[in-house]
Image (cartoon, rainbow, N blue to C red):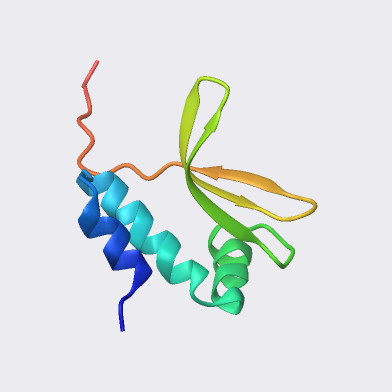
Length: 87
């Protein structure tokens, strides 16, 4: 059986950040209770029936992960191998 998550990942050219974002989103999408629990416990947002979208554009910004339901909108940035600068 073909897994649509892995088919999507291996057909495109993704950097490590996008790859990990899509993996996490795919796992969360696989089970509504897991997605709701992640939003409740990890993000600290109450509610249920959340959806997660990836690489969503709002105005000039591309947001890695967007969690939403009828009452809530939450942006989550996933940063992998980010360079930091000491100032």
